Image (cartoon, rainbow, N blue to C red; front, side, top):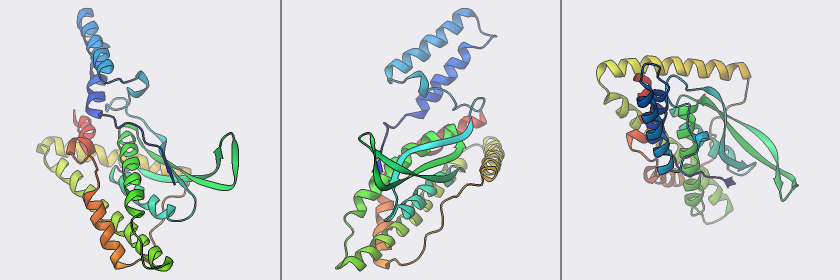
Length: 259
């Protein structure tokens, strides 16, 4: 398994910059006001070392539904499919769709004979994908670290315990995601909550339609063959996992949809 993790992006800062750029293009503002908004946006970009390529797509007006590739790659075989199911929990929390393509592995300018890897893709909105990408990389790194410490008395027991670990991790991670999103929406004023619910239903419908047209393979269900001891360890690990679980991290940008 190989993981490539980018530096987590503070999306609240990016959203603020995008709003400033939008104000800088407002025909109703004076030229001095537009120049002031642009200077403030550029100053924030410099302060947070952001490139122009990282700006755009997070406001309701220009959010884009597309096919995006995750920074996470997984070597085919072993527990890769079960880890894909864990990533799918994060993707599903954002009402997006996960699928993968298997490709040959290139190293040092050549191809590894028989080497294959899963390239993971998300059908979803850009504002959601940026969060998914950061969280998926963080979770896969945590799973790899914790999983390496799960060992039984023999190979068969280790295999069973590790499958149980991955199953338990997935179940608890899903519960945590549901809790965080539920609390974030419940804290909104009634009018904003109603607006967000309508918008999210429409966004989810568009994602499902785009995914169904492509006729792609999505992550399959987890199968049995795991130990209860492993499940307990996985659940405990997921409870301790760093989701960046401030409600602003997981759902803050979505609140812009109500503005």
